[in-house]
Length: 88
Image (cartoon, rainbow, N blue to C red):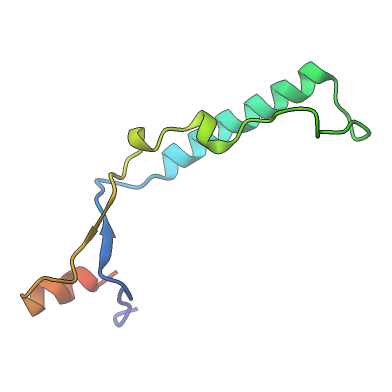
């Protein structure tokens, strides 16, 4: 693992991981889908074409998640600092 490096000089602006945010959003999405299925009394014989199910963008907000965009650092002149940033 000592030779593991990024292939692209792009890194997310973050203070942590988005794992908790993604887990929470997926739980909310699954709950909404389950509620819709219960409401319409669907089973394996029911057609889902007439029912509008929510999508991930309907239940989540990327602005409230941990990361805040990405940053390109390929134009840094200091070679040692750039090598340090390219490590995983």
